[in-house]
Image 1 (cartoon, rainbow, N blue to C red):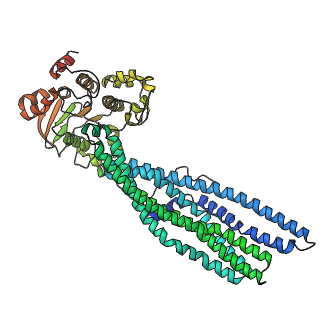
Image 2 (image 1 turned 30 degrees about the horizontal axis):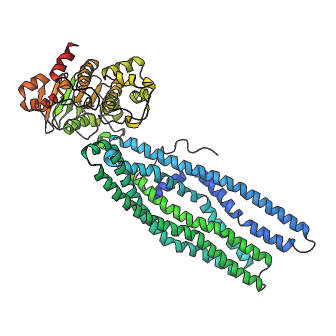
Image 3 (image 1 turned 180 degrees about the vertical axis):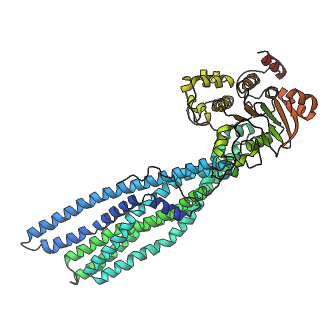
Length: 596
């Protein structure tokens, strides 16, 4: 059978209902599902054959002198058992592949859409929701597809038993035909209750996971502010609410599973009692009595599958609804993927970047600094210039949102101070999607003053780095982000607070080396540190998100009291999470670095 799962999730549907999403998972591997349904049907129908063969062996083989008939029917019974065992293995293997294919398709669909959302992801969905989808909902959806195999077979087996029972007794056939639907109706209300409870449970679960993510991510800050207990109390309260909701889900589930076992057993007892009375009255033979018992006992399996299938479908719809809701989320217009409708062309030569909203103009080939009392204001300018937010920003004579996004991303790089560091070797962490040459790595490491990081790790560039750089300090992580940005060597580099977490000595050195390394290239940094501002060719002083003054750092110090008051805070002790003692005055550091 051909492998249909080579690229699961490549064409995941969006803006669909939960039912249509599940149907897409089925049609995406229709031949495999058809094979699973065939194997499941043959296996399920095969369960009904042994009672028939056994009844013939009793009625025809136990009479005196009928040993050949007994041996023959016994051989048939053995053959049916072996064949059904083989069909059961094929069914199980096929259904396992169907489940795995559905799992990978959903995972690929979610991951692909996560990449499509890009920088808009944190604004569109919580981390807890993504975690809940990846851990719980994916497994539930894949389990739902199991019903495509035995579920079809259960319907056929139900019909086969009805026909076989009709040959024995119309009364028994009527009991079977009416009894099985009655069992399904008894479970129906519980399935509706389960769907509501499951939906509420999943929502609370994603919310709790989001709170846990926030708690772990901000543990150091919370500890410093004395807020750990407050958040811990909130987590405990939400956890208790989730537990109560889980009890409701468990109550509905336990009743469904209990009825899934108990109702078929009661049904078996009723049919057996009725057929035994008929045998005692001479209406059916002993062999037919054994056959009826066998049919009823075998019918327990498809009836259980009916109930289990309804249970799985109910939970699958809840999980699929959450996945579909995630896939419906659209990225911001500025970060939307290329649609082929962009009409502009990126400038062939370096051009001026303009942000009309703030009045910032970035001259190509220079180091421009944005200084604002509120860092969010300067970061917002960077987002607009990097096309991470909707705006009328232009590059040359063309609006950024009219340019192909891929070309914008290839030529303009936004280096966020909080950008993720993924797990891997140090070389992989700083290399990004490229494999830079050794000289380029050395230059970038030197510019970011990160030689001590490389030397301090046991295997240098081949040393492992944990996810988010948890085995590094804040200053080390920040310098590695700068190394990664420099290695990308973009035409335009937009760096948000690239030196906010390092000590004054390191900041002074990085400022000088960054200016030299990016000479002739367009660079924008946001900062209020005089060490970095003094190295900028142009400083844009922002007040309430608008340009209030433009000039060199020293000129603005002389002419703008508000600017002087803002950067004077840089004379305070240096911000640092790294050891290094008391820093020298920043004016002295400026002169020292200039002398170098």
